[in-house]
Image (cartoon, rainbow, N blue to C red; front, top):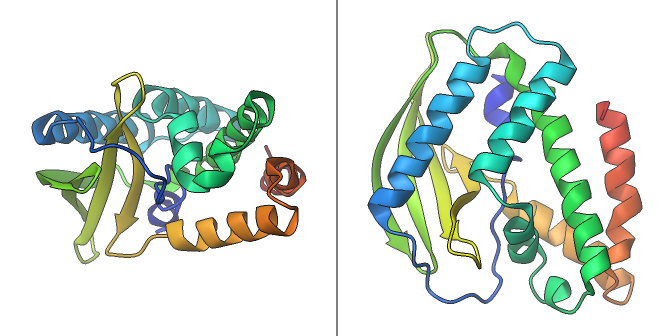
Length: 202
């Protein structure tokens, strides 16, 4: 289903250097369970316009993720070397990209869709929450969610994978290649992101 591809591009996590995550496993598990519930309530079996879907996604992203944390972990040292203004612009564009892309994909979630949140475990600087997606007529799929604490101490979801498949490595390689070719300038990503959002209808 299209929405399973969508969950691969909602939030991201990469290899920035950060201290060990303070988020607790049970706290992370409850966060994911709440995010799952809100997402299914918003989309499962619902008929929505693109604008309505994007508004709902923006609310969910704001509640359960954090674009600054996602951006920092995505870009690593390039983020740390950048000034505040390009950081803000990149985070804003990245959020717009997620909202638009996800909004085009989540409107086919079945009313019978279920995601069972199971256990959580600490892995390095983050907590991985394991769950299973159960769709009528389809094989169960493993869905893993990555949770970290922001600099302010708020637990947020920054990545997830479906059945072991994630686009994080590809996105990291693409983004860092563009920045590297532009002598480390974060601004080199702005126009490609704007074009992508425009293509997706954002």
